[in-house]
Amino acid sequence: MTPPLGALRRGWTTGACATAATKAAYAALLTGDFPDPVQITLPKGEQPSFALAVERRGEDERGAWAEAGIVKDAGDDPDVTHQALITSRVRRAPAGAGVVFRAGEGVGIVTRAGLPLPPGEPAINPVPRQMMRAVVGELAAVHRDPGDVEIEIGVANGAELAKRTWNPRLGILGGLSILGTTGIVVPFSCSAWIHSIHRGVDVARAAGLTHVAGCTGSTSEAVVQKLHGLPELALLDMGDFAGALLKYLRRHPVPRLTIGGGFAKLVKLAQGQMDLHSGRSQVDRGELAAWLGELGADAALLQRAYKANTALEVLELAQAAGLPLGDHVAARAARTARAIAAPAQIAIDVVAIDRAGHIVGRCDTEGENG
Image 1 (cartoon, one colour):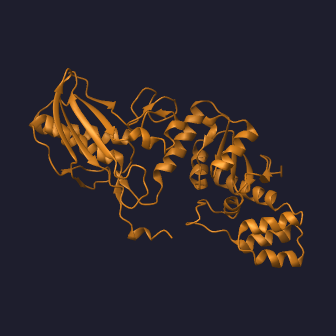
Image 2 (cartoon, rainbow, N blue to C red; image 1 turned 180 degrees about the vertical axis):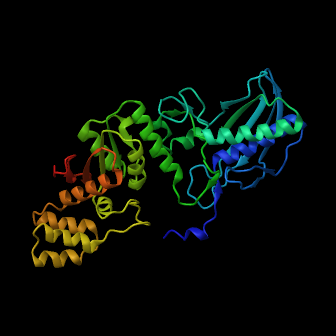
Image 3 (cartoon, rainbow, N blue to C red; image 1 turned 60 degrees about the vertical axis):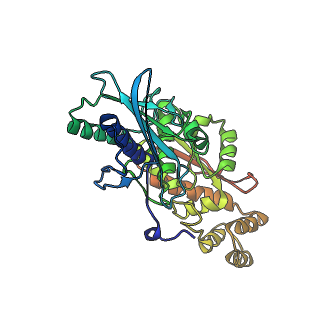
């Protein structure tokens, strides 16, 4: 059971860590000394301090540089980058260059249109860039420095960590993204996953796709991809966040969406739930059993359905009786999804599967059972 939010410890985004490391490295480039701990100001005004794990200075064919590193603390959030070492190497840039960003080891490069950054840019998102420019400007003003610097952000083992994210599918290759809009990681907010959903929509739209799919897991995704012959770029990693996907599509619509998922998760969507995670929503088995009555179940079957322990057990009872409960759930799930996405004009169809990956219910884009 997920503990109450108030009992959980917040953490810091990769963007906040990169900003603090940049401030320390630039200060060392200017003065020869690394401030430790180093304090930064987040977008909402909070001023956390970060201990340095790395302090390095050196010189190569491109001139002198200073590098600072911070071990990311994601608090109690199950973040893939928790305890990752985030480094920033700062060196002089040509006069008038301003702040230039580079991808160091473990930071990805954008290769597809539709993301907040153009192809070819390091995957350092706009808010972290703004935060780093701010600390450079702050120190440059104090030390009467032009502030023309190159900032190279790295993440130790970032290329391997990125394989556990959606970056490769989004066209961010070679490593992780430097993320964060507030600088703070809220435990179990799953903001990074939702961010990936949004960017997946953006990339699909930029590529001109007219049909995308949001699925609850890899099995349903494989079924839907094969069913409709969809390219990988059309597959949005919805997971349990149906509401996050549909609300974003409401503002950034595509012509057609297929929702695919396990039967029990789609029952939750059919019952109006937008977060399908088992720890945050539950199937109303009484309501599910009542739907059998709408389909013509007799009293004996209804009694057994009301006593069932799982949604799958109710489905099996319906299948044995020849009642199209899977189609009924798919139709209700599609109705919920259309209501969330409205007023955007999106044709939405739903495919429900069992644990073996067999289709147990469908509803087409017109609301009819398939």
